[in-house]
Image (cartoon, helix red, strand yellow):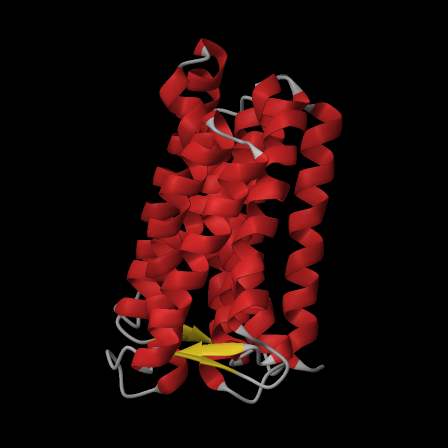
Length: 277
């Protein structure tokens, strides 16, 4: 069986937990969805440090020829879909620590299976580390669910921030992987794909801060125009300095419209889901 089919099965498992959680949630559905979005956004931050910067492990999905893109694709299936889906299930069904241990054991078992099948490879990472961080993630998800009920302004800010991060990083990866739209060249790593992923992820983590304030407090047509102009100027400087290379069919103006699109979609998600938490 091709490697990528195993990862698609993993995605189906994640979707199952999402649907099951929504149907059986003991908390408002908007809060359950919010927990998934937040944990997925957190997963991107975790993977940036552990996976991209520190080279902890790699996935062998067999979908892309480029190993870093292929490995990142596998990371999205695992860390940005399945783990947040189980976090959502634990928090929304208010499951106790025994369930948390059981789910951690399940995912550790899947990790060992993927290692044996050659779908996944450890560098310095070890499976017990996975169990430890899973228990931490499950605990954060349960704590986040409690914080949502208090309706604090800071928790609303982070709900939106992690959601914007999730959208930014997902869109950026799929544009690069499937459309070869752009590449960043900061010169941090010898591998050009890793180099691009490392800088772009950091860029979107920082960029998401002002966009969060914009969406939450100053969402006007002129604010979006200011965002467009500011991004256009930054991307122009990056292109002229050689840090950004836009591929055929792309230009600075088109590329600068992407953050505006993310801001618009984040505003809708915030209005429809996050504000109801």
